[in-house]
Image (cartoon, one colour):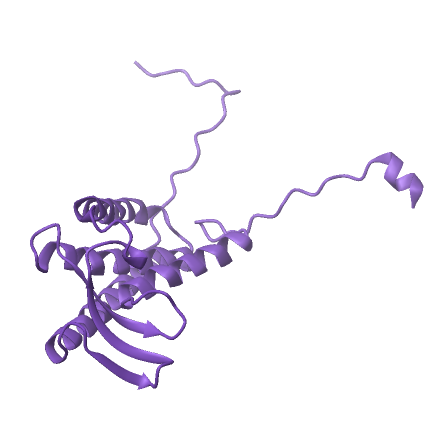
Length: 193
C-alpha cells in the first residue's frame, strides 16, 4: 500500500555524501603526524638514556628524554588508565565522525588530533610499566616553557590553533563560511544620522 505524501510537509534534508578529498586528507595528516611521532620517539629511545639532555640550540632548544605517566605538564599522573580510555574515546569519535567532514581545514584539524592522540595512546598501551599504564616518551624542551613534550603533543596543540582559526573565521564542517546575520538598523538610529 503506497503512503500518501503531504504536499505541505517539508522535504527531507538531502543526505550529504562523504567527501573523499577531506577524508583522504584527514587520514594522510593523521598518518604523517603519527609516523613522525613514532619515528622521533624510536630515535630518542634508541640513542638516549632517560634523563639525557642534548643541546640543539644551546639552552633555547634541547632534547631532554623523560617519561611521563600523566597528561600535559605531568598532570593527572595517578590516572593513566583514565587518560588511556579518554584518548581511545577521542580516536573512536574522530573515526566515526570523519565521514561528515567536507572542509579541508577541518579535515586537517581532526587529522592532527587523531595522529597526536594515537601517538600518545600507543605509548600508554605498549611502553613500561604495562598495558594501559605505559609512560609517554617526551623529549622536546624549549627554554622558558614549563613542560617537556613530543611530536604528538605538537600535533594536538597545532590542531587547537587551527580549530581557533577555523572557528573565528566561521568556517563550517562542510567548508561553507557562516556569516553573522546582519541586524537591520532601527528607525531611531537612522533618524540620528
